Image 1 (tube, rainbow, N blue to C red):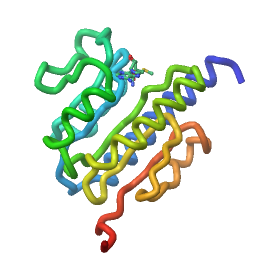
Image 2 (tube, protein in one colour; image 1 turned 90 degrees about the horizontal axis):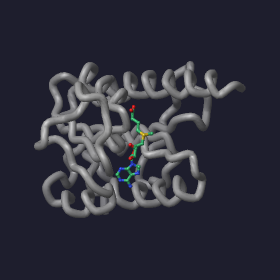
Image 3 (cartoon, protein in one colour; image 1 turned 135 degrees about the horizontal axis):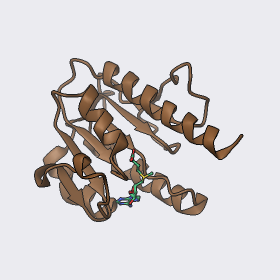
Length: 168
Ligand code: SAM
């Protein structure tokens, strides 16, 4: 597959998975986390499909299109691993949707990032909350959801927290 075709499939996967996730969290209160602003494409899409929600963005170093940079109250700059541990109390159990798009194209680094967010995200998620990820995550408490029809297995990943927390 050409790099152009691969890129197009990635964008379609992002759009279709985000659209499905927005439907899945319909009626569920809570903010959205966008992990990895990049040039702001998926952030801009999230703004469009989740107009009523607060969207908090995490990015190591902002270099997005000027129209796609959140206001300072909704932007957490610096390393995600640092910001998550600082914010756990504020957002514990409240986040309805996370989109993680942190891939670097370097398998070792991406595996470390996937392990970091697999460990770091669960305390933030509300019951019924959804994670959309460009990397496969290890989330034993979550259900792995089927992908939209146009998305090939392994290109994107969808996870949902149980609506009723398991009894202790
Ligand atoms: N979703 C974006 C878009 O549609 O434009 C593209 C995101 S790009 C693939 C990944 C971004 O994640 C990069 O801008 C990178 O700086 C950021 N990133 C990767 N690892 C990070 C980390 N550990 N902490 C904070 N930001 C990180």
